[in-house]
Length: 108
Image (cartoon, rainbow, N blue to C red):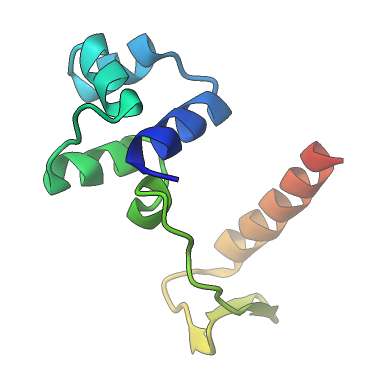
């Protein structure tokens, strides 16, 4: 999957029209169309901005598969590949768990 295909899929998954995304990015709707068709690609800074607006990571937006990461939640602490994510507090961890169950519920 390339940038254009990934952009379109992520945009559609979030129920955004090309017009809505263009408005959020302050670009012309035709620019979004050109990106999705693969006729143009934004600069790296633009890709970072698109990823931020779509709340996704750059690898996913570029169509690259994320490397598999081991995620563990132990006693209200999140570990990714064995490294503690210190910036999270108990409330954050509870929200993450809540989100996991919400995603699971929506898929069934």
